[in-house]
Length: 110
Image (cartoon, rainbow, N blue to C red; front, side, top):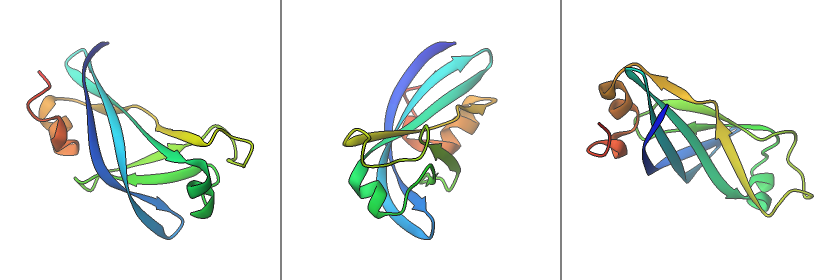
């Protein structure tokens, strides 16, 4: 796997029935003929707890695609004040599919 690009985007975080705007970070890597995108967000622990977050949330990208974000174990006040939630790596068979999911990556990936 070869790292290609880092990009940031704006999406919606869905926790239960609550939707909140949030920034996300994507690390794109080339894997054979396709691409892998590792997505994560960083959010304040207390804000996540007030939203009702426990272990999982759904990130909705501007493209409409979704990814499940997870925290390792149940989030509580003993955690760091800033929490990183990550999705399983997303696989795309070609550059066009990657750009459809992450338009913000257009122009920076070969």
